[in-house]
Picture 1 (spheres, rainbow, N blue to C red):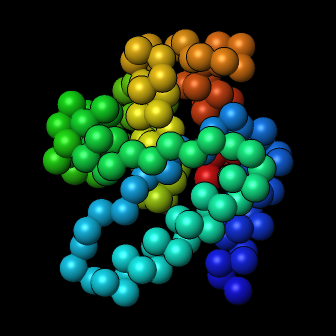
Picture 2: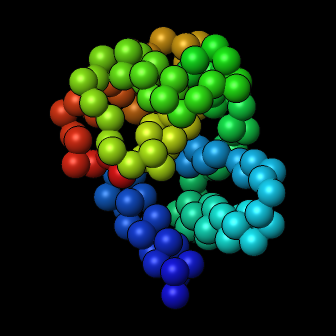
Picture 3: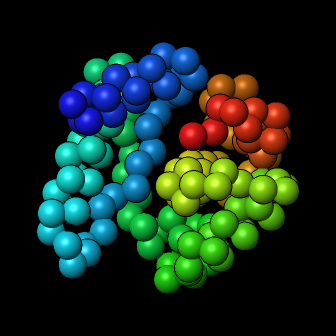
Length: 141
């Protein structure tokens, strides 16, 4: 039931926001095998939902996300959050660490595809993602 909810919710988000791609953080190898299996299933369902909507999917290792945001692949979540505030020119981020991680993956993907300039993007008319996040706090999950 939970996997179906993730699939449907992902498709609803895709249908509402019409993204060109899905960027997702790859699993990290932890000590709890059951947690890793559950996370892998959830990621697989989200990826399947994107593929069904004909989106390309890009996966980033957690260290790569941290490296692109902070310059340090071993940075703490708090460091990543602080840098995101600075990069995006925001006063605050969503309270959920999962949401902050998602924003970090999106910014990492942006950097990987635009040469690192946060105010310019490829495709979709050169959106300024910092302005988008400031103007649409209810659309950040």
